[in-house]
Length: 101
Image (tube, rainbow, N blue to C red; front, side, top):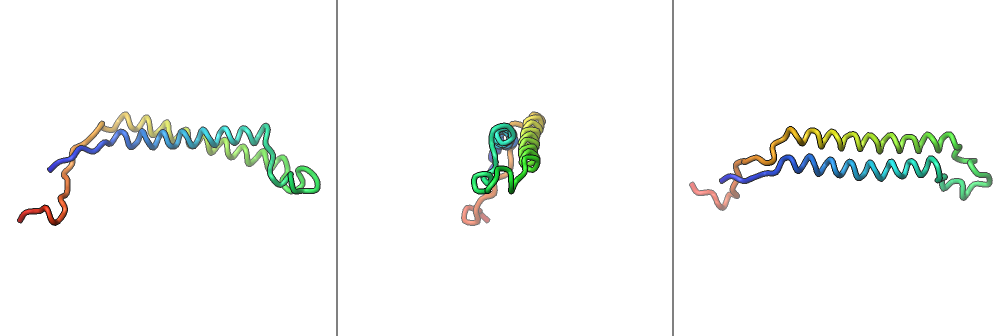
């Protein structure tokens, strides 16, 4: 007995997941870089006392780089999926109780 297994769709779904997550992280990193500030500023006696602006910009830069890396992996998944077949046929294993001897 044979069954159809979709192959290309798996790589495309993984690409969409990476692209979605990467977009969220890039937007969050840009927000942190230009508009946001750490929560430590709300509880410290002076602003930028616990976390300096340099540290905060380094963190938001990491977020942007990480998000762009995820988007890059998404593009790689989509390009790789073009080389894969749409589906394949494989032997379906029957459960032990359906096998005939």
